[in-house]
Structures are given as C-alpha cells and as structure tokens.
Amino acid sequence: MSKPKLSASLIICRERPNHPWEILMIKRKSNITFSNAMVFPGGSLDNEDTYPEWHNIIGCSTDTIPSTSFSEKIDLTSLRIAAIRETWEEIGVLLSKTKSKPPASNSLLETCKTYNIIPSIEKLHFLTRIIAPAYVGKRFDTTFFISIEGEQEIILDNIEADNYIWGTPDYFINEYMANRMIIWVPQLFILKKISAFRNLSEVFHGASFFNKIPNLFQTKDYYDKKFLFYLPGDYRHDLTSLDIKEKKYVNSFELDGQNMTIIESPELLDYFP
Image 1 (tube, rainbow, N blue to C red):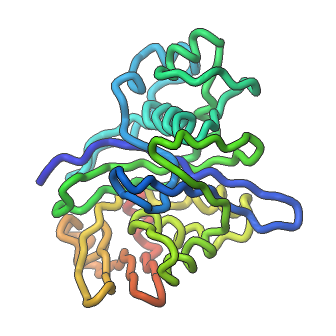
Image 2: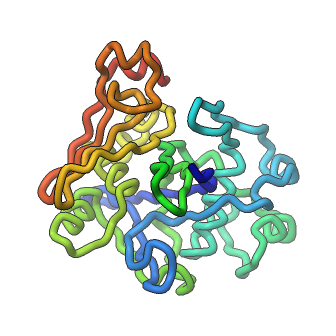
C-alpha cells in the first residue's frame, strides 16, 4: 500500500441577499491530473507550509489531529497554510487580515514577510479528512476546510484550472447526475454532506459536529456505476476495531446513477468525537 500524500483543499462559500448560499468549484484543465473534473481549490502540502516561521507570522501554536491505526498525525496549521496558498495560486483569492492584494509570487511565506500579510487561518474551519483507497495508484490524504469569501475577484491561473462556477451543493450534484460534470467521489461525498444545510449559519454549526476520524474509503463494487463505500466505524470496514464491529454501526456512502446516500449511525460520535 503506497503512502498517501498530504494535501489540503478549501471550500469557499458565499451568501447573497435573496439567493441561496453557494460554494465555488473550479474545473481542472484537460492535460493534468483529475482532468476536466470539478474540484475545490487545493493541492499538496509543500515543505514551506511547515516552516516554523509561520507561527511567528500568524501568532499561533501547532494544531494537530492525532494518528490512528491507518492515518498519520497531521498539523492543521500547516495544512491551513497550504489551503490558503493553493487557493491564492489557483484562483487569486488570498484569505488574510489585509484587504490589499500583493503581486503574484512563487512563495507565500516571502510575500507575507515582504508585505506584512497575516493569513487568516482562523477563517478556515475543519470540515473533514478523506484518504484515498489503497488500490488507487496516486493516493492523497486530503484535509478539507470550509470558509466564507465572496467578495474577492476570481482570477484563474490558467495552469491548473480554466473555469469556475458558483452554485449550490444540489446544483453540482444534479449536474453530475445528468452527466454534465465530472466530479470525483470525495467531492461528491462532501457535497452530499453539506447539501442539507439551508444557510451558512447551519453549515458552520453542523460542520462542528462532523466526526474527526479520517474517511478512508473502502469500495464495494455493485455494478455499472453503482458503488457502496464503507467508511471507518462501519462494521463492514476492514479497519474498524472489533469492539465497534460488534455493535453493527453503519458509516457508508452509496452512489448510483440516480441517488447518493450517506448513512451514519449517530452513536459513532461517541467513539470519534
């Protein structure tokens, strides 16, 4: 089993008067990984994202999630920096305490030091963490954050993305179901999780109750584009501990050509707070 690469992704939300709340997705270019797919801005954790200098700039300590039997310990501060950096590089949106935008640069750290910019990591709320299945060739261990930012102009880098769309979670789900968009399973899972919320207050309140256990997808193939994915805590998942298996708790994501369903036993929150 190859070790997944740590990465971070940012779900940007906006809410306008007399409009439903929306999220931003960008379309990957056709000549790169995940070609033509709709994704959230983000990318791999760089060494610079982990430099101790960030703690002096931001004025905070390390924020970690402990390791499990199938995942490594992660530093949420570094991953928040990665998500902010990637979002700035890909769509020109910089979440910081300074309203003025600095010129483009290959180093967010040097830009912050030069222009006295403080990234607003407190605006990035942890949403979930998804680890690609063992059979996937290029694996990622991605931490997804969610934040509000609807005022800055979107300026695509045209290197990784060539289009962007604001829409409700249901809009993207419906476009996928109608075969008008390519959206990968992690993004579909998140879209389904947040689609039940009516406004951003519900989004951020509800997200605080999502369990923190990493979602290592284990796939059971049905047939012809129909899948059932087991997640840790489900009694059928290989990495669920025996004491939880005995309780027959369910934690699954089912996807077919017409519907997608998440089933999560509420008792799992007692085990995975």
